[in-house]
Length: 75
Figure: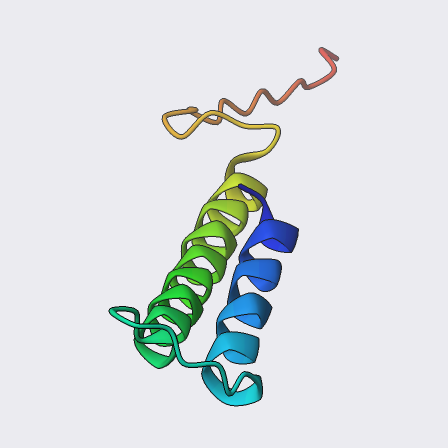
């Protein structure tokens, strides 16, 4: 699930918690909304952490050794 899915999950949870006044027997929509908002927020945090880690590693392995070579002209 990408960042868009996490934001949609958070938005649906907020709508269920704050915007809906339905009453269903045996179902508490406020609790379901809070759980969805928490899952969406956790998804965004995890996705941002993974994305940050990918940006740090792009183009170079973690155990890369830098070897520098100097050439001098023989006189």
